[in-house]
Figure 1 (cartoon, rainbow, N blue to C red):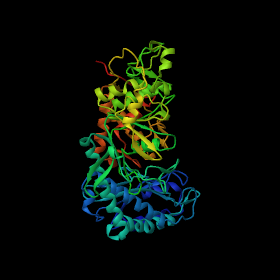
Figure 2 (cartoon, rainbow, N blue to C red):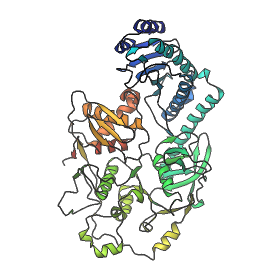
Figure 3 (cartoon, helix red, strand yellow):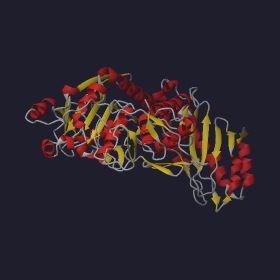
Figure 4 (cartoon, rainbow, N blue to C red):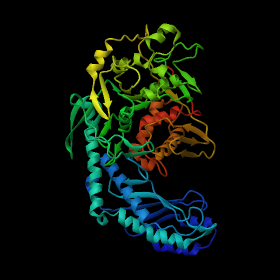
Length: 564
């Protein structure tokens, strides 16, 4: 290990030399209270900035933040935000070409995710990864500019954001609030099963967002208030008793007029599988951790998925017990998505009729009269929803604004009225008595479950993994379309998924393991070795359900049914 003084000598030596000489700086340097590591040096000033990390072995953080995995992740998230704020305040863009002097670090959103950018170990040491654009004039090194960044700016940022004794009272209060909130969120999540709930929405929550492109809470929004008949009470270690809407397991229908908050509630529930930061408004919206949002995805690829529980007897004779297509329709894509969600272990389905295939969800009586049942291969979801509840133990939370076909099926009906939920279950049941909805006749029992084998994919010698925003993962120049996997909330999750898929193909997939076994092995790697050791660069944790979704959307890695 070298010293900060030796780093300064290296920089003095390479001043004005061609850009590749910056590679001489790679290594670990002791700065007294912390270690600085130059992990990767960019190829030229116009390339992606260099990877740098700092390790503080004794930051002095309170031991309480290490009491559980959830509190540690929440503390990491808050400390990373402090680091980003300090970096913004200290950074002064110097001269140079391309990305010279640019300092950047992960900017977390409203959800709290485990990230490789900030990691607290069991002994309390903290590591933060960030990026620096190594300065150059053209392609000649500006080492004095980098010296100012590494020997002045970085120590200033570390002292301000990673050494607890230097925190202001406000920062200490924010860190304490973060880990206490995480403990409360974890406590509520643990109580869902005992209370028979699929989700909980605390009274006083703010569900509407600032705009269609912002996840920040809307100002002056109407606070959420549960109807008395559906109000439940939960216990938390720091906030004490909390009341709110308990969405019971089973079939819950969310109805109401347009713009009254139906989809807003469902969107809060779909993101309720993650913890949220204090002040988000949805920090006490807690959903079953396995919940999956299902929708139609015209044009997606499907590989050997058993959709026979929803679609049978296709006119072309295509096998629906091992259904494959490169260009799925709305109904077949949604049928496949639901079957895949069940394979991924989902106990709760979240569905919005606005993003569903209409012919997959319902068939009204008139249509059944005109087009007889034996001429229609689709078994509507309305005819399966109770069987999913009763035989599979799968709950459904469904937003419906145009059809009353599910009123008779629902265990609970919630009407959103100007963002206020009202329990109209009895009213809906009474109204449904006046209508007869025909069901598809001679239905066989639901057995649309897939057990599939993952096969090794061919890789080129230097397989590259990239992600583009929230849309695409590219592996070896082959794209995986993730646009409609709606419970992904951060680009770093896609970056992590890409690396995990490649890791699986290289070290886990053996043409014998099922998809479930492969995903379980990846989860075990992340839990035992830590995300920090499993994913390189900047990545964020993902649920098994999103890993399943990524595997299922690959067009270049075969997944075939397991032979009996």
